[in-house]
Image (cartoon, rainbow, N blue to C red; front, side, top):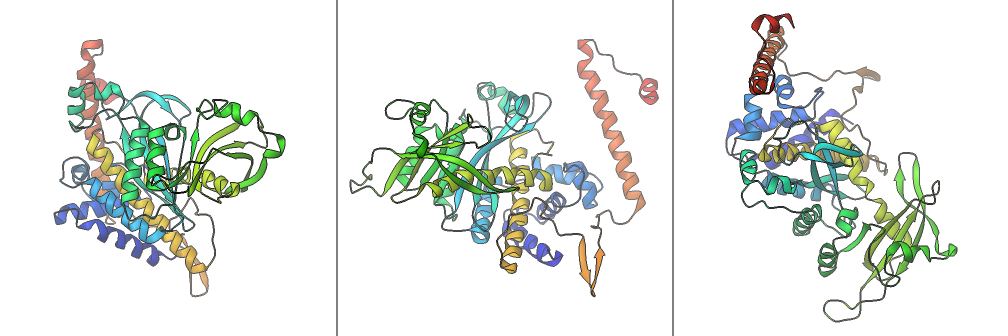
Length: 447
């Protein structure tokens, strides 16, 4: 991938959202932040991003996330328009899922001990619900919502301290997903299908909304999902004869096609909402692992008449696209490396990280189209350090924006140590009443 192509794509995206930042200094801070998210920074928090950008302190980037006046939702709308232009396809699939962000303490907005699929266990974390857009050209994150448990929404003083708006009430993950679907359908993104996990699939209001909008879906549901007789989807699938199971691929994976056994059956036909003959059909669908036949996943589907089982399997398999987005956005764009605590700061960092990831996806799609071959989007989407010049290969090291001055690094080392010492003193002062003693200056120096 040529660096000039990558730089041009990034500049186009930054210009597109620049008008959302009312002052020139905010635009400069936004540009520095996104460049840092895409740069070779160890941990992409405001301290290290500011050092990478050549700033003397992180105050400017912290102001961008916490106090400056700009709307993350407006930037999200621009991001959706950008992705529609770069990756849009009439057969596009909207994918919804949640991911966890491990955190310490109790003051970060929405944090509590709760189950995190990312960690695979109950942890102290925040949960974000995301929407991704997947097409043959590529995939990118297009929307996000922070899940607020009842332990937060029922305590308004706690919400006020975290700058959570007064009108933000408790909403289930399914409710958040429904709101994001409505926004996506109203956006320029061309969406033909929706797929999601069982947290969304079991929400009948969400399924009803998609059916009324004429949008197909393949939604995972729990094994206890009610269906017409015998009453539960797992009991219905248990009655399927052996010949009902067909072997299909649900898409390409890292090690080749992802092949499973699938069983599908049409549910009784329903008329369209205008009373005419049905144009869509409802399905029950089950996926069985080849290596572990007892592992069965269940789905409800709604698709146009004449849709075949392989197509339903492909849509169900497109759920993996959002996992690839999470992996790339966390590894390459610092999606989970923020250190903000307040509600607005979370949305601002996440939105800018989504923009950075979208630039990488768009650049990869452009490069793939130029080569005229479809391929899986790689995890590492940055320009390769291997470049060909004059018939020979050269290894180029990314430039670090430190101004080339040793005193810049020394200044940051001094600043960081001073603020870490201040944080330590404040920590012990708060805990002094609980049996902790404030260290003396000599003891601190000895450590």
